[in-house]
Image 1: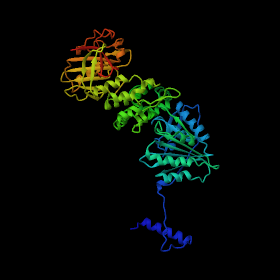
Image 2: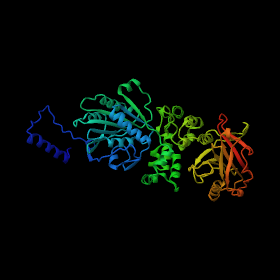
Image 3: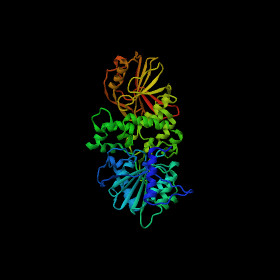
Length: 550
């Protein structure tokens, strides 16, 4: 059945073909076909204004219309120009645009590669060059934007055939640079890569051709050196954000106001807000400035749950073909060496609890070589929770004598008092910087509470008020019970057990209601009864028991 619109179109076409243009009617063997392009395949046009790149600038603005149909967040973006920003722009300007190298911009997700590449694209001289931006995704149509003169056009590309049409359309005779954004080493992109490289290799005297891949991965994995020589390929690594870079970025009032909703928390100090969020976001500026902490936690849990082979991924890191790259960061430690630790302390904790101590030790093996101090010092805390969840801990004194065993128990993450079973359960606070304690073991059946502080330092403050506040919260909850035994324990590395020292003790007397005596507060670790907590095959974790009473 033909609807009214089809009937009108048929009559219009017939009049245009045969009445107006005097074309011959088709014979019995001929069929006239009218092909109407889908609306989504047509170029949509809009004006684009000038943008200027300044190698000394600290911030760069992308307008909302600049980011439309590019794969970037569809909103106005203020970019902080850290050193990696300028390095990437200069790479695209000098090595790719000027010298004609095939460019590979590589780095973990969330480092700002795509936004920086768009900043570069907008600052290219469009009187001489046509810029084609293609954002690719494995399960979606590809988004294409063309910048030429003062016009910006966009369309959808559904397959490699349409990609060829876009690349080979050179009616304007301008030089052309093509930026492929979102590329990974997935098999889905093999044809795309081949088509783009074939187009790139056919440069002629009329049109210069330039090509760069803005990758969502930190490594191309298997690279054929001879192919790179032929392509004149060059790589530009983009490293993860450091805590200092975040703190520098928020010094600008406008920038801070833009990202403040995602930093969260009641803290008034900007640096403190960033440091608190850094526990979750780590080296990903996307997690730091575009998502709140709860959303980041969900994304990292999902990424950890998606690990098909945690042992394999832990061993070879983000270069594993099974790797979920958003779990990793990348930092430079020398001119020739880089490390790829887990993206954040929270990510390490999640993987530790899910996968166990052996896996997390492999994941964390490069962290001590990292040039980023905020990533160091996690191993004791992370391994502690991993062992509690997977097998428990054997307790030793400083001389290696086994004293007791902390059995395997459920770990619950909560800042409130959760529903408590009769048996033992470990509570891990969600707010990592809440102060005082890192873990609490509660056993209603035996009326026992053990509060644990984990540290890799030589000395540590002891603010008893933090412990008291949690105990008061327990007493006021519907889970309350009479505590018969309260134990407070500090976990340190074994080599520091004999010299570990408590400093800045505050709140003496607050725990007397729980029969916890303060007599030993100011005594150094060698005098305090010392115990070393570790899984029997491990020798990196230690515990100093400060006081236990019953």
